[in-house]
Length: 249
Length: 172
Image (cartoon, rainbow over all chains, first blue to last red; front, side, top):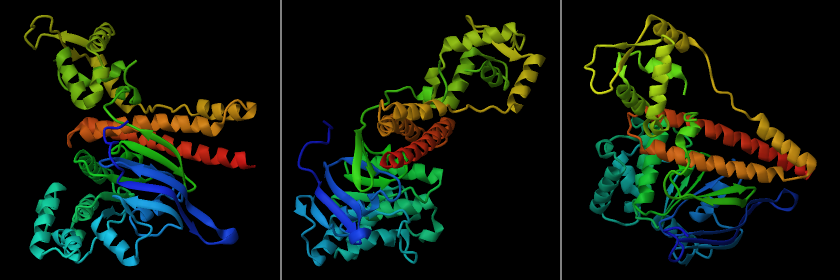
């Protein structure tokens, strides 16, 4: 139905489950989730804290292993990978953006963005060139030499987003990317996510902040480990904006 | 729209309707379309009748271009309006009672009603946030759009609370 709905999915999860504890104390943080994400799709998974959305994101990003179910990314089955294979997958195939940025404080913006490429075995020169391109893309060329402590929250998150793209991942995963930001910084990050979407990147965001969902074209509501609702939104503005502001009749 | 808005927008300097139109468009951005020219001119003639504004000869009277300025009474009304504390009251009682009635009569599932409402609010929020992202950084309309988004988010928080509460009652 969507313009990006053709072709094999980038992400495919079937009966995905993550359990903690056992017996009486058993918690199903992710409970039989089925999910397809098409190439170029931007998806938001929303729900209150504790609904399992972060756990799900960790499974998708290979940060955690499912208790049951199957997970494919780009045609590869992730749940069957060895520890080493999983580490490689995390490094090469996914870019992850966290609420708390997770930048290295002692490295400059440029060095932070270079790091994943260096770890993947690129030459310092290649890593440097790619980092420059990415900082330019997120509008921070003039901050390349700054330490994170000299940047605003929004700028730090933009550096973290640039870093997530360093190895040209198949998918970008973001966990509450606007959670620590004021409204100006939030808008900066929203605009950046919107540009990623229009550039055709595949993005999955889990969030409690409905604003970031406005940069996606599909929203899933999650409760108690399961998907309970889904809506797709595309195209322009159909309703009356002014009516929401109390203007008009 | 309140006639005081038109009156106050005229307080900067005597202006013709077209100037007011431009000022409103600046302040409202993509919401400006909701205020049509007819409304502005009708309001101006009402304000004139009420003695709050008067025609002035300070601008060349091109075809049909009347320039209005505030009278002393108009100035006073603007000052009064600026100092009035008003705020729209959200009508949440109707929705609340809808859930209560649906559950009591067994006519509909309150959770289903909450879900439908959430979808509608999410759709609105999506639209308004997209409009906000499209505004230039120095836009004053961006601030208005942000306000609408924040209110919708507050409503969505309340719907979450409704959902939780009705979910718990269902379990009992």
